[in-house]
Length: 381
Image (cartoon, rainbow, N blue to C red; front, side, top):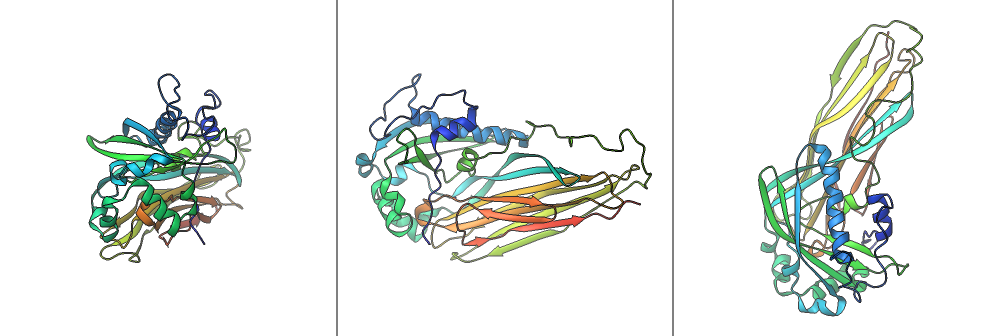
């Protein structure tokens, strides 16, 4: 998701985040030289892949949608074997029915002090996407081996691809809302400065969010208390009395672009809603929501496009709403990057402080359709 920087993640850090040190550091040495090393019948490469998808599922679960992955047909090949495999036999390119995944953060503040933040991933089917193989670039890849693709990407885009040590390919069956799709995906293994660790790049062009979930640092929604912490100074002292009121405002925004397109466009849309309220104790509350959002790409492109999206909606409570009414904001990040044969990573994070919304992409996007809305509530009276 200057030159393109490859997003990679060390195995030991990944397992630590994933399991809280309950799993051992499995990687020792070079994946090219140890493709058959077993742990309970599973190679370390397969274990990393499976736990990466399980981690994505844990964040998807908070959305209330039951998205499932069935992984099979694992094969790890060293660098010397990559000239014997066609790229399209290992990796399915974009097109047809795909799974869009949006990262959604909810954060809370009380009296200006940060309280909690949690995340969930929101999945949905994206229907009828144009088949990438029908483009000029897609025609070129038909007869290219993995080694040839990596060499081309290293020359034109990412020099790190010269150093790929091995590739683990596998089949994915993704199931959501009674529908399913089968396709091929792969992990590319890159060298690390510490020989006891692996780094990897995810090549899944059908389901978004796989690599983003591997690097996620926030807890899944539901893993932390939802209520704001700490007592209100008015919970034991009745304090002042104010008029209770509540109102909701918010626009619907859209942004689009056509760069990199022969036909069609890429676009972002988001509906924002912010509710302000005061209670009888003069506590001011501001709650932001994004009821609906979309980060999409359609039509034919001059090269493969990566799309990534993320959103954040904050809520805040100020106990003295007469002099310090609450403020909150929401932001929807949507970015696009064109890359050779879709061999790149892309992501975007959204952070909020008061009414300030900041968008931070993991790579340099060619287009950003970032949308935001903020509000400072009226004083309690």
